Image (cartoon, rainbow, N blue to C red; front, side):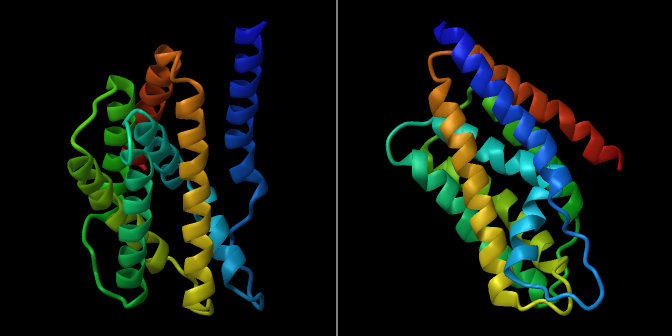
Length: 195
């Protein structure tokens, strides 16, 4: 009964992950106001961003102590700095490649249950966060207000980290489930490398 209930929750969560991006339309329509809503939807409509954000939460859950929240907070903080670079028009070469590598690496870290010292784990996610933030800021519509857009993508990112963290903590007693989730995330990165 317990396993059946957990499996139902996992299937529900995976269903939401599959359908949520399709329900959220972040296409920019002429004449519409751009701000918080568009910023919030931006991380939800790109599979690369969505999977990386969830992987950060899953990986944080595999750590102990303060690292549980320091890893996601590091990502969000550095992502915001990267977003400022993108909004300012600074060119960051290789951003899309780095984002694809982040999905591969973060999924691999979850799959192998690799843990580093908290400071090194924070540095790893921080490096990837810079590129994710840059992409969010760089892709911000010209008509958007930078502050509400940024608040939107930061909040969506934190919520995705929270989902990953909750799933990781919920399945701590079933490490095989987490390993498979990490392997699936890492494997999906092939799509981002070829696109």
